Image (cartoon, rainbow, N blue to C red; front, side):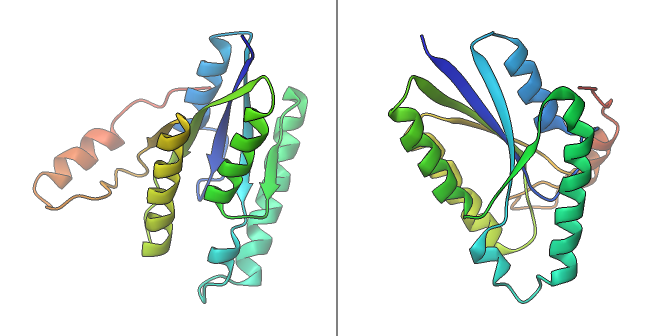
Length: 169
């Protein structure tokens, strides 16, 4: 049996503590010597063209990733910066894996909310993951219920989410 790999996709939540996708991924990795987890952040050209993206915003992201990579250095880990849209990145990784004895098994990220473009991108990522047999685990962020059709019960769900204990990596 070949190596199984997974990716933690860092989106807006650029931190290493209280990061549920990161915790889940490292737990998965510890489950077998045959598993390895990689971390990435995507500077997506389709999103960089948006009017609400500034140089200052990009500088903040790059500086934060540099700081996180310094924190990860003792663990021989890093967050790779990729310059492509995530669906294309996952397709490229799947192609490389199919030509080797490596199997892309998992993707972890936070659910992202905000603009329609990222929601549409996430739907495309979900479709590609399903086609490739990759399990994508999205962790809720800040108690936001993405895709809700009613506000009924949102306050109780938010309170329940916010009162959950923080699990450490």
